[in-house]
Image (cartoon, rainbow over all chains, first blue to last red; front, side, top):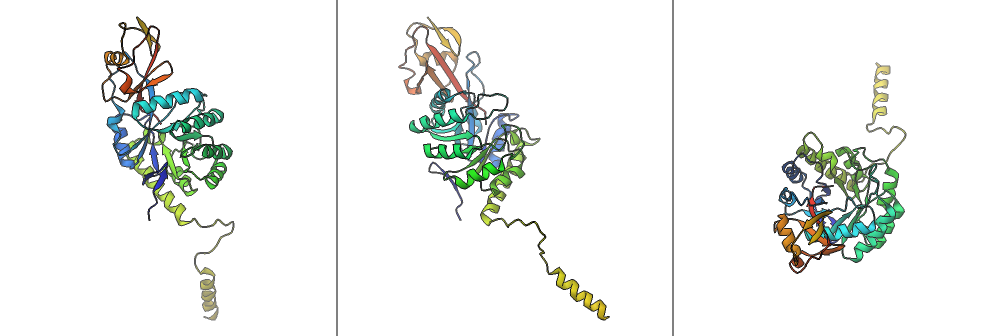
Length: 265
Length: 67
């Protein structure tokens, strides 16, 4: 069965997206991306140091078959986000965009008002907009109506590795969404990712948990497996939850017969 | 004349193009960079046709690692 994820008309057989920040080296990052099997990889932009323009080219470390998903990290409002989006498009020749507007450096929480404003503008400009957003079901529906390619609600603040701290809101977002829901930020362990997929998320975007692991390459593979397992479990239909024990073997009948035997002996 | 490049005053010759400025900085042809003059993002194939003026505010960015 083809269970490919489709975003803006493009098919992805992997439901794990990888962020490229914080890796110990570009080479380790490359190996981790390969081990993860990811087909969607984020990048950021920075001002070029005009005194030292000779640093490594990130594109040399991202497999060619991956879709590049440049982000707008560092912008404070919709206007700056649109500028950053255009710069990304000019630098990388792609209309894919991870829209992120988080003016507060302490918690890096997305600014909903500016994110909505920027999404509306960027969709008109032809971008495939994947907005990083609060786990806010109302905002997520509004983004969908504006033409966002996905919504990417956070599980917990960026880089915290705390896992899913807003499960009820994510459940509502997943239930209501007609576009893919990608859980972005805060996923700290493969078990968190598996759980997100069991809830019905369409994909997870992981960066910190892989990049700062003792062995990022092995961790990337662990995430790939957990996301596959979680997806399979979701498609299989999880069993219902009960407050009372429900026997899995005919224990009572067996004991009754044994009791009878003893009694009769 | 003086133009502002990523916030730094930079001396360039009169009539200098964006292409020439980027070449002077050392940007290679295949690098994932983009440039804007003011808020206008200039497509790479237009760098050569973009003549800088005194006091222009040039922003040059590079794609880098990030999540």
